Length: 224
Image (cartoon, rainbow, N blue to C red; front, side, top):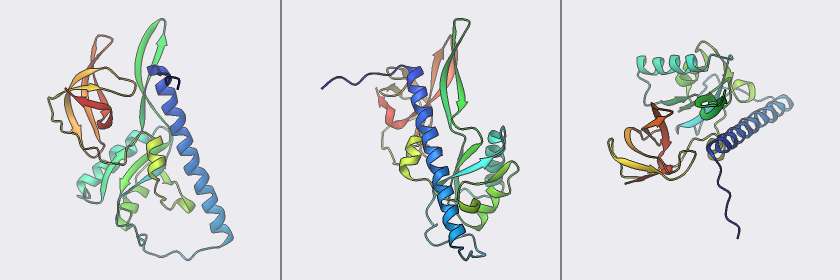
């Protein structure tokens, strides 16, 4: 069997963006089909947004005005803190992808939004969480029929670069690790922070002579 071709960082980034765009397109197509079904057979909508089976947290896609993604994220996170909703709303994410640009012969790594105009929210859907998100300035609605939240599947989340399974690895802040997969494969560094919710660690890397924090998936590292 022929060896699998190894992608360089530029190709790896382009591949991730392509799969993310495919995931978003799939979600939007599913929402359009759902809306068509609603038009054909109008359903009775309860005055209570919370519905049976929503007691578990899921990831939802929120549509925002262009350029408002980071502000929406910050405002939702502030509301979560002020209203102490940490037990119902767990994470707000603007999916980013590190890409390499070459200008005037200089290579530079920058973070770009994978799909502008969208924010991901990990939450338990109920009256309160729906209201918080829907009434955040800059939000135009959830991706779903009639802007009703439709959770993403595990497959869709993986395409967006978000791991849905828990990864059990014995590491602590300060531990030396080696990146064994992804764009930074082969890189060695020390853990600065650990996010069990996002299943990632942050390490300090020297990029073009400048110290830069890079987020790496727990599944892509090995403890030294």
